[in-house]
Structure formats: C-alpha cells, structure tokens
Length: 213
Image (cartoon, rainbow, N blue to C red; front, side):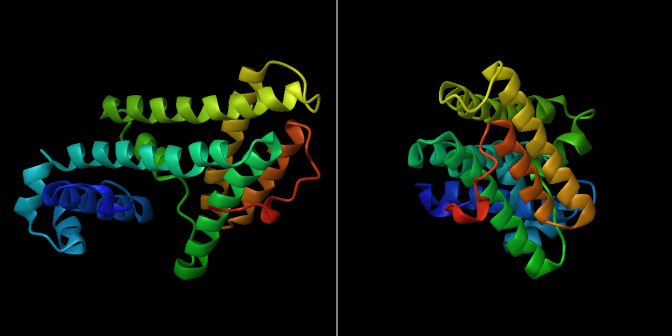
C-alpha cells in the first residue's frame, strides 16, 4: 500500500499501521500476532494503534477493506484499463499475482497465499463483517472475470454463460492461492492461469510474456 496518497499525517499513520498489520497477518495469522507486535513493527506506540482502531478485530477488518481496494485497483481494474484483449487481461492478472508470490518465495522461502482469503477463513465465523467484506471484494473480482469471459465468448473463443464462466475463473484463482500456499510453489499459480486461459479459448497465451504491472 502506498501511504503517500493519503493527505493528512493521521491518514498516513493509519494507512501505515494497516499495511504493517496486513504483512504480519499474511505471513502468520490473526491470532498469532499481538497488538504489541504490530506497534513494534510499525514503530508506533500501542496507544497510537488504539487511537485509530477500537481493537485488533477492527484492525483486521481495516486490513481486509484496504487490501481489497488495492487488489482491485492494482490487479483487476488496471488490467482492464491497459489491455483490451481478454487473454491479455487474464494473463496480465496471473502474471502480476505470480510475480509477487515468486519474489516473496525467493526472499522468504514461503508462499503466503491471499491475505483476504486467509483472514476470511480464520475470522469468518467470529467476525461476519470480515466475511461480508471479503465476499464484496470477491464479487467485484468475479465481475471482472465475467467481463473477460464475455469478451472471449464474443470473440468466438469460448462458449456458454459469461457469468458462470467468470465464476469458474474466480474459483480457479482462489484454488491457485490455496494450492501455492500449501505446496510453497508459486508455479501453481501459473498452472491455474494456463487452465483459465484454456477455458476462455486461449491456451496458446504465454503468461510470462505479459506485463506484471
């Protein structure tokens, strides 16, 4: 998250805390991270965290919301704006996701999957608001996938209902995150991407030839 886009010092501080907490929750889990650890990693005192967030649960919800905004803007909306061809948009999404996870795996020796899915699965029962927010984000992702499917069908490369195909593409992406995390193999993301491209009729498209940003 680029905290420089926030206008006031308070907004930047809040965004910085969210960003640091997101990284800790992502690499470990919500229950395994104490507020003291977030404060230490963010280089603020604990009182500062409670100035912006009622408790750690409130911070987790903020993480899901802010990460969702960043994911939709950086990965899905940017690809729609940059590329018109459906296969280029889909391959670009997977290239971006793969590049991030491959880089982290090289640096840290592990794959962490999707932070939104991780928090939603961990907190969904106790914090329905997290599950609701995650569902809203996933619905927006699915809408982008359905647009890709619609364009592939219009181009004569795929058949069927665009909304059903878009939902399938979204589920494949969720599965890619889970498989890559369990196996610690970011190449599982590429596997899902190639399967997704085949589903929309573009099996020849090379994901690694696409732009990651």
